Amino acid sequence: MSKGLDYFKEVYDEVPGWVQKMHDYSPVVLDHYTGLRGEIMQDGALSRKEKDVLVASMNAARLYPRSMVYHTKGAMDYGSTIPELVEYLLVSYLYKGLPSLKVSLESLAYALELSGTPVEQPANDPETIEDVISTMIAWMGELDTRFLVDTWNVIQTNEAKRIEEKIISEGTVSSRLKHLNMVGNYITELRGEEAIAWIERARQAGASEADLADVGYICILTAGIPSWFEISDSLNRVGEGRT
Image 1 (cartoon, rainbow, N blue to C red):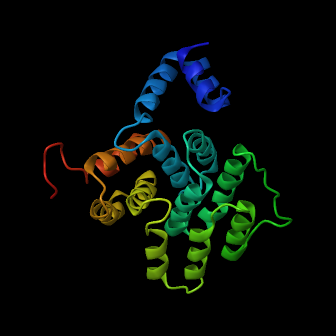
Image 2 (cartoon, rainbow, N blue to C red):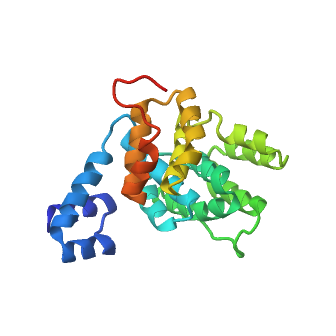
């Protein structure tokens, strides 16, 4: 087995079909991709755990469950807790509303299964925000649901500013990481100009240029090189002050 196949078997416990096909058509391409992925996903300004859970949430936000599920496993393997994961998934709701939170149910169900707590799927697919959050609370059982319950109470006010402030506030997950999550949500969909305000807010929440660069790198893995174009316009050069 090639180094690329070995790497992904270690990451996912099996070789995903898309990896095997990349190897079949060009082992060299897979080796280069594996090297890039391995470099990006190691601990840096952001930890490996933070990178995986951020990518999981970013893919929930852009309604892409396939990559979301892969990175949910990585997040759990590297120490994310269920309450942490839920807070990140709420950031996907802040980005694209109910559709993102519906997709995120698959991430939560898989994370609970990986942690030894398989869930019972509801008889009918959750359709409303109340349905989705009630399902999440029920699945979490005895786990800490305080942030989720408090957020639901604020969502019911229908006051957009209060909802944003609650979701992005300090909880089990820092406000800094939630701001970085929002940056990534925009960047993965190549909305760099719209990301500028969130990039500045992330800086104000304590994010460094290295943090933002790491977000750009993980966006490359899930949305390609154009995502780096989108964030790089807002990054300061190393050694330069903020403009």
